[in-house]
Image (cartoon, rainbow, N blue to C red; front, top):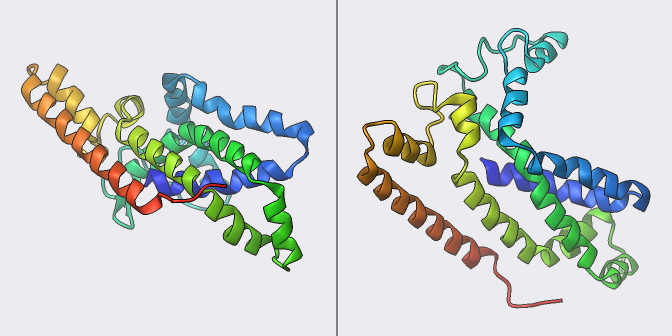
Length: 224
């Protein structure tokens, strides 16, 4: 959930940031990167107020446009969209909001490194804006997409603070992640360190396999 959502936000946003004037470019970069360097606990408190049932910001927004908000954003086990529990969607949105600024900075730097002559040649050949983006910019960003994809997968599989403080694995273990289970087995459930160590090795192997797959799919043999 995190990876496609993160890339779908950061890449178009990076292109938009590159299209604005130099005067505001640095300001917007700082604004979008601010959640990344902020305290996770502070961000959880903010999102806790947003997800508060009845009087939270999201509930108020839903009511203002005539929609009925869920009775509980984080504790309703019966609300599921496309097979994904509502609580998991809420936590994922909070994590993406905190994490997307890092990939945004990487994409902005990658866009700046693309030679302008390549874009100009595409325009001379009659390419419109969309053709220039999909046929010139995106292929040249393939290595950057690989880097951000690997980093995003690793960071999303290691998220702990947001799940621990925002949902605590509930409702009915719908937001129970491996990292949260490792923590609970190691420090809460009679110090079951053996099981926690085994789960840590399994998590390491999952990350390793996913990283190798991403390198196989997205690697390139050329440079510019």
